[in-house]
Image: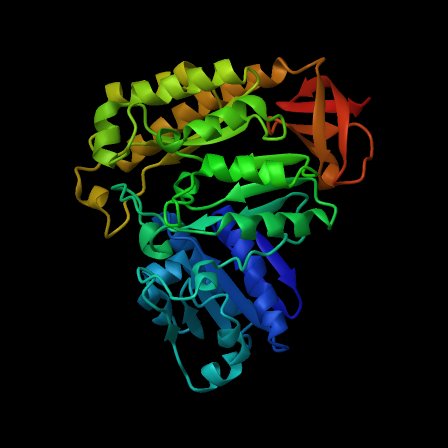
Length: 429
């Protein structure tokens, strides 16, 4: 995914937070009056493959544009700054805290002229100024996007044995509710109809704020104080941390969209324990069942890792079974990728080919349940938000192709007419 606004080009790898922060980087660089051609690479560190792709992109950038300075930042740069600083193609490495610092960009030319290779601070140290906590700078939109993503939390206090991200993002920090509400009110003035709350560990929002408010309180207060907001989504949650207020809001507030993406990771209790996850298989199933009773039209997605160290065929089968037992519709499947510096990298590894084979089987299962779900939508009337390219999203995040040319950013009712090649088609009513 990339965002380009001449003369500054920002290439983004990884999550929605990175995409949001890339927009903040672009704006910070433009605000500093930078007019020289720049390549900025916002990296991801989740997998070894993400790091490999970043290095490959850097070499391609230098080959195609030998005169342009290359700035590397993001989680990969924060965790392995020397990896990028040692590349001859790289002009400067910036840490996650530095990447949206206006002063960094204001003095970039001097920094490059001095030959400085790295500006990477200790991400585990919480800064004195709250506004320094967030790389997004609370930007109001990503250029070209129909919905707005609002970073309300960053960092993570948990230590899942497979995850390197806490070392790239630091401890959990939250944006105060009043600041979030003000930001969303400004977003709505731009004609945006849907807002997505996002973070590294979204359900930990508020634990570091006075009074330790919960995510449920934030969502409830946000919807009460911004009655003109038509649609609100949550990016991804940890089911074991969902508080009672959040469950109540899901049950009774139609403006909170009936789609939750869950960080489940596995369906076997021993693997979950070795991952250092905080939920059990039974708790995940019970969570989905109870929410479906509260909100019958709710749809679940989930992240699941295959081939985690010591995973047997029987353990993997429990992840396959979890799809039906939780009633999952949208799967994000990842074959395990050992990351140096994590405990899981030192555990007995499953053969890489078997990890990928299991991922393929789980994706096939996911495609089957999604196909059944999509087929069941034919003939239904759905309330959608139109996007660019003739696409629309229903409240449960189902994608549809519109059979009429409708401007993006519109809320309207459509009737699902058919499914072709696993794609739903719909016409406005």
